[in-house]
Amino acid sequence: MTASRRLFLGTAGLGAAAGLAAGGAGMAQAQLAPSRPQAASADAEPFYGPHQAGITTPMQDSLYFASFDVTATKRQDVVALLQAWTQAAARLTAGLPAEPMTPAQDEPPADTGEALGLQPSRLTLTFGFGPDLFSLNGEDRFGLAASRPAALVDLPRFAGDELVAGQCGGALCIQACANDPQVAFHAVRQLARIGYGAVSLKWVQSGFSTANKTQGTPRNLMGFKDGTMNPSAANAAQVVWAGAEGPAWMDGGSYMVARRIRIALEHWDRMKLAFQEQTIGRHKASGAPLGGKAEFDTPDFAATDADGNSIIPDNAHVRLAAPANNDGATILRRGYSYNDGANFVAERWPPWRQGIEYDSGLFFQAFQKDPRTGFIKLFNVMSKIDALNQFTTHTGSAIFACPPGVQPGRYIGQRLFETA
Image: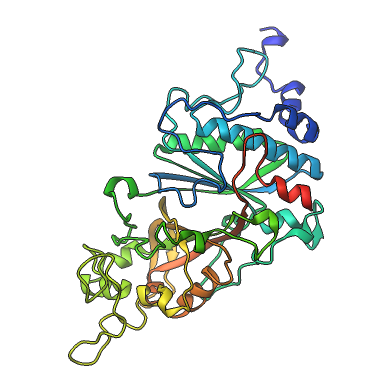
């Protein structure tokens, strides 16, 4: 075999991987798609618009979520990355390869190819900016520190948290949702590949949902409907989208809180149905609040039984999460179940069992216009007295500012970099 045929990684390959970080904003701007790609199928969600897709978009079957550290050191390289990601995301959500394909044999393929021939499957790509993008270890990284929104707070440590460093935080995030898990993974893989030299993967999480299979509220791994109290489409705007109360670059965006919640399914599966329903505060089959008949009946928190006991227990999950009991605090839940195999676990509640259990649970995402009056207000109390805490442990945590949507010819988060 001649030297030219030996399968070694040469300097050309290394140069291509580092090209994004070295290219600067000018090169990426020249490549930015001037108009919206034509969708390869009607099974596509719009990418361009006033808000990012994947927030109030009806849930898809599959999730692939990735958090990134930024390795670039220059502001223009972060801009170049976001420009390249925007161009690729517009193509991917339309069912096209991440970049135009060429037959060149002496370069890495412009798309890894595992989604060729697949439909868009309602793919949405949602981008978020974490606290680490604005400053790291107390230092302003890219001249953005003064533009960090007040609502992008560092999440407090809640009661019962057992956070794993490798499942927390990040400077940037990408949420890919689709009705095909391969399409969702493919999209994140392409964006990570495009970002070589500017970002590195920090942690990832895949998930699945029954939303499209039940044509109603999806069920979590505990068997209960998850998201019944979500705001309706009519009032979601008042709950989800940031406005004039924050920086102008976030007007029309939203704040995402992501929590990886492990559920002790073996423990839960041994509980009597009545106990499960009292823990949640709803009937398992119908989703109706205890004392009610239908899923969307308004819970009667004042109702008592013949002995004077609350029909919906004082520490039931639904009571503690209800806006009526939290000064109107409301969030948009967008949770996906996950199953990551099995691992060793020690329960934090009696009978203190230890052993091998499913590493399964809920990848919970809350979208709101301000986490301080949304998730943090709600979960501060729930983390202490929610009866569900006997079965759940929060192992991952992150917060991101998801800027507003993008128009053709512009890139995600452009207004931040124009004004900071």
